[in-house]
Length: 251
Ligand code: C5P
Image (cartoon, rainbow, N blue to C red; front, side, top):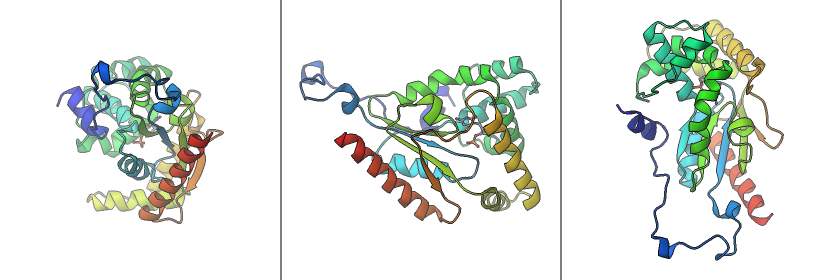
């Protein structure tokens, strides 16, 4: 699959540009709006692994009719490239080479395999890898119609001026239960203690790295999904996002 097709599919595929004949276009001043207000909203959804942020981000994108980017897939695609080449994950240089020609099929089950998940968590700590993936994410976030992005550093680094920032979390134990269910559901052999240890290790790496660590932005709203089912979590996220957008409109 081509890079473009792969990415369009991965990120919701909604068209990002609205074409209008020049004669019909009106400037922001014509309609009495500042450019910031005319532009579609950016919704940043950050949080640790298995917190429910992906489900929430997809639901928000559907609800507001916005394109969606799962930024974790980019790091997973780099990890998968490196894995397939047999590259050395302890070498930042080799991880950077794996960022070249980042075409991938988002439906490829290898992207979500355990070795690739571990590798993605490792290589995402390299500043050169993060820098190589930065523009693609920022371009997606700055498209005219607005966008929803989920990841670890959306509200802090990729889109610090996002109109809505949600930080979705749950206890490590609840997240491990969810991940275990997923793995067993795919017919994989997994044990709760191992999954919990893995979640804790990934949390420590994501939160402890020097560049773009996973952290709650000052203006983010915390959504704890520990005691919420998927439907309740989505309903709460939609309510909070609508409230934030309404506040931004009246400001
Ligand atoms: O979200 P997901 O688990 O698919 O992300 C895979 C890995 O990519 C994570 O373990 C995390 O370390 C990294 N990541 C990141 N920054 C993002 C998205 C993901 O560091 N914005």
